[in-house]
Structures are given as C-alpha cells and as structure tokens.
Image (cartoon, rainbow, N blue to C red; front, side, top):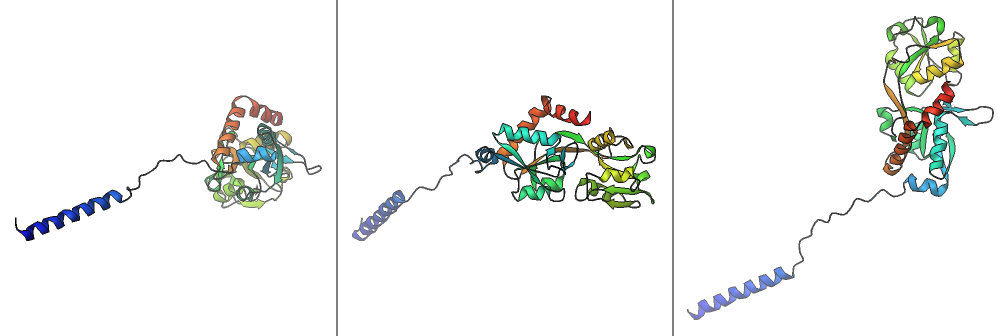
Length: 276
C-alpha cells in the first residue's frame, strides 16, 4: 500500500470514529408516555358537600313537578322533593333559584345554579347546552279541553281549525310544539303557567297541548277539564334533571340517584301524593 493510500485510509477511519462518538452522545428519540387521563377538577360532586348547599334552578309554575306558593314563596312538587333528597344525599341543603322556561338551561350554563329540575323535557337543543340525567318518567304532548269538547279536539287536524284558540305558556316545549303544528287556529300566549288552565275553563281558550302528566293533574283539580288520550300522546318525550355540561362526575352521581329513586318506589310515592 502506498503512503498516500495509507493516509486516506487513516482519515476515513478517523471520520467514522467521530461519527460513532456523536451518535452515542446524541439524546435518544422521545418515546410516547401513556399517562392516565386526569379527571376534571372542581366537580360539583366535591364542591356541593363542602359548601353545604345545592343550588336548584326551577320555574315554580309546573305542577305536579314544581310549584312556588305566591303567598309565602314555599316550593313544593315531585321534583322539589327529589331535589331535597338529592341535596341531603350530598350532605347539603337545597336552595331554590327562580328561573323561567326561556332561561332555565341558560341559567344553569352560566352558573346561577348547580342543577335544574321541575318537569324538564329532554330535547336536542337543550342537550347542546347541558347534560341530562337518567329519565325520571316518559311523557308526551296531548290536549286538555273542557269536558264538553273532549270529542271535538282529538287530533291535530281537529284542533288546527279557524275559530279554535290554542293557549300556550311562553318559552318552553309547549309553545314550540304549538307553533310547529298550528297554522290555522289562533295561538294565544298566556304568561302565567299557574293560571293558564283557567283560560280554558272560562272559555277564553279552547285547547292547551302540554305533557300528559300535567293534563292528568290539572283535570283532577279542575273538574271542568278533561285530558284527551293521555295514554296515546302526540309525541314521545322523557323528563329528567339538567346538570352543567362538562361535569361528568356530578352527572353520573345524579344518574345513580335518579336510578335508585325510580326503582325503589321513592319517585312513585312523591308522584302519587300529587296525582291521588
């Protein structure tokens, strides 16, 4: 081997040694570390027991589920009793927050309360704003009319005629259903849901279409009124309790509470007290 070739070989070996040294010194490629998903912080499941208060949004105008006595401001109803039981299970007391059907889910979303109750129907628009618990009961829209008219207003076609007045309370699913289905009859908005059925009794309106459960209750306290086919309502719906979107821990707890109450007779007992 020539002297020149020997120098070239030595230079090549030296370069390889340097390359190997640099490779050994370089940090290892990062590896993916699979860490457990962290639970969301600040769940109501923890903060409510610490505060000792469960803030409950409710409209107070939808018997048998929620009612606020105008004389003393006391709340009563099936879901009011359930809310008190839920609060007790969390070592807290229920504090009721006034709301309306138009603002109920918004009030919950902005943090005015921890849960919304009172015959709240599950709808997809509402489900975009809040979480819903396991349903408390099935329901659906059906007419309530003066008993003398119970055979005149059995179908939507019979109701939706010129000369018929359909009364609705504003902001909720009753008004939405009426406006979606009534084109010829007159829709009359009555702002007070606690006196709306008096409009039918007095002849200032002919029909209200609301949840079958409410028609059965109102027919009991207004002998002049009859619920029309409550066992076969126009629609299918479910009632539940609304909880803040994003708080899965609290939602799951409310789910378990509702599941137990609707299977151990608690909910049925509260409902029977109002329906009997």
